[in-house]
Image 1 (cartoon, rainbow, N blue to C red):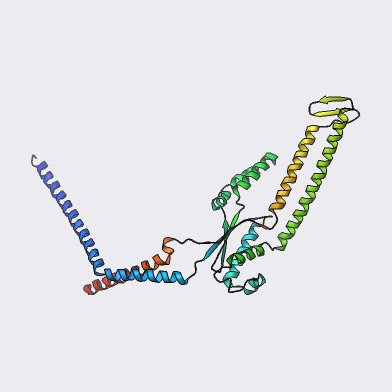
Image 2 (image 1 turned 90 degrees about the vertical axis):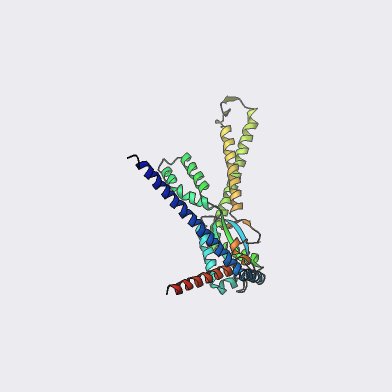
Length: 330
C-alpha cells in the first residue's frame, strides 16, 4: 500500500513528459511550415513582384481611360400624399433608363447618348425613422380607441409627425458632364403630374380665399373694438371681469375678441406657409452639387487588380501542389 503514491507520481510525470513532447513537436511543425512558406516566397519573389507591378500598371491604365461616376443628391418632400407617386415615378424613370426608352427622353430633350450610364434611386433620408414609425403603429392604434377629444387628436398628430419621415433623397449617378442638367429635367418631369397639379391649384385657391376671409374678420374685429373704445368715454359704463358693458348695448367680451383675432392671424400665417411649401407636388428641399463618389479600398482598380493577379497565382500554385500530391498517391 505504501508504494501506491510513488507509482501515481511516476504516471503523472510520464503524462506530463508526453504532453511537453507533443507541444514541442507542434512548435517544430509550425516552424517548419513558416520556413516552407518563406522558401516558397523566396523562390517566387520575382514573379510576385512582377505580378504586383503589372497589376498596378493595369489598374492605373484602366483608371486613366475610364471616367469615374459623379453623384448628385436631391432632398425632396412630397405634398398631398404624393409619396407613393414619388416612388412609383422614380421606379418608372429607372426602368426607362435601363431600357433606354428613346421616346420618353426625346420628349424631355435628352438624347440617348446623354443617358448612357445614368442611374437614379430614392430612399428615405432617415431610414431609422421609417422603421420607428412601423414600431409606433400599435401605440397609435391604441390611442385611436380612446374618446375622440382634442387632446388625443393633438397627441396623434405629434406622434405621426415625429415618426413619419417626410424628406426623401433622390440620388443621380452619371458620367456625362451634363448630368446635372439632365437631373433637373427629370425633377421637372416628376413635378409635371397633372392630377397633383390640379389638386395644388384647388388647395391654393382655397387657402387664398381663407386668408381673405380671415383678413375681413380681423378688420371687422378691429372696427368693433375701435367703436366700443370710442363710446366708452361717452356712455355710462359698468365693468365686469373680462367684459365691457355700454349703455343700451350688449356685453362685449374684449378678451374673447382679442383671442379670436390672434387665432385668425396665426391661421393666416399657417396658410401662407403652406402656400410657400406646397408650390409643387414634390418640393425641392435641397438640390445638391455634383461630387465624385469615394470608393471603398478594394473598389479601387490600382489595389484590386494586383490582389486579383496575386490571388490567381497562389491559387494556381495550390492546385499544382494538390496535383503533385495526388500523383504521389497513385
